Length: 102
Image 1 (cartoon, rainbow, N blue to C red):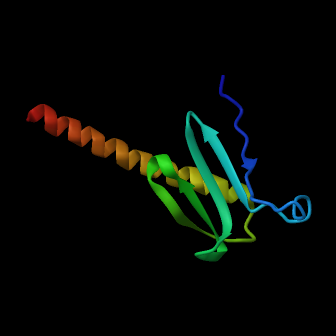
Image 2 (cartoon, rainbow, N blue to C red):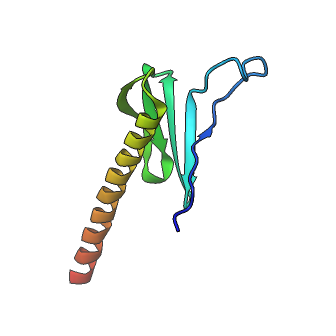
């Protein structure tokens, strides 16, 4: 049975902002892979970006304005991570094949 996965609000709040300011950063961790989406990053105001350090994705623009639904942004971030993981996997397969041919 698939494990239930929840995105968590990981917004950095000051004490006076919690409950007043709308969340702007969400993260999910699954099998030690953490994907994070954030809106209004200092280098990308008005946009959503993602990070996934294990896949070497850092501040990748997702093509959504900051008022887009977070669920749509989260699905796009997972798709970007899957695509990057596929590239890494294909590269490692090619490396393994090259090594074996040696």
